[in-house]
Amino acid sequence: MKIETFINHGTVVEIESVQTMNLHIDKGQVCFGEHGLQEVIAADVAEAEADTPVAQTADGQLTALIDSFTDEQVRASGIRLQARVVLALMTLMQPQCKQKVDWLSFYSVLLNRRWVDGNVRAWCRMVEGQFGVSLDPRTLANDLTGQGSNDYRLWTDADRRIVRRKQLAADFDRRLTTYFERGRSAVLEGVRE
Image 1 (tube, one colour):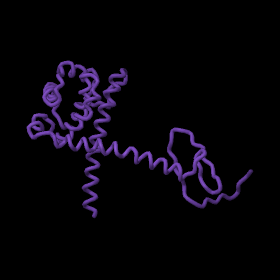
Image 2 (cartoon, one colour):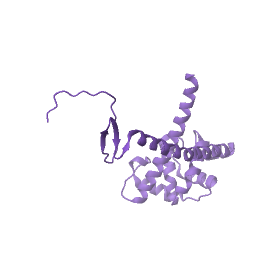
Image 3 (cartoon, rainbow, N blue to C red):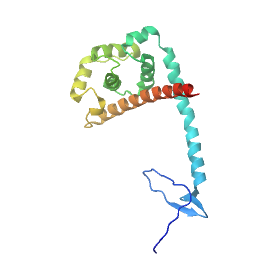
Image 4 (cartoon, rainbow, N blue to C red):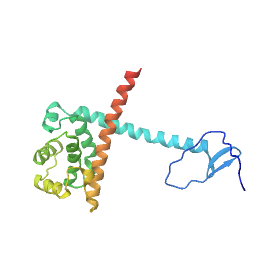
């Protein structure tokens, strides 16, 4: 069959997915498998709304933790910028530190942002003082040297423990960025009005 003229009246639907989707038109309605477009959209909206309370709970926990740190704790942390936010986020993510060396993940992110000095011994004292976790500075320094870089993005993927540390650092970095972008958006919204 040869189509000489093709006329499209309507909108273009762009789909980005890693799974196969079977689309067809049934009586003028776009369908995904057995479901109409409106059903699929409604299901996605319901799923997003179900996820929102979890995000709000995490934001509420973070806000409460931010307010819980005293000025003395902030000064003792040695974190130059946004120490309360960093300490609160580290507190929330602390259960993800399966081994003591996992604390290098947070250190790497803060070093890359230049929010802490490159002093592993001071970092270990801060972690012990703030979080009650005793770290060996020599072990951490050797591990960091073994990676060949302070930047977690350049660490090797040779070992699943290192991959886990890289993921922890990436999550921490992303959550910091998201927190500050959300705050900037709120400020800009106030300026626009």
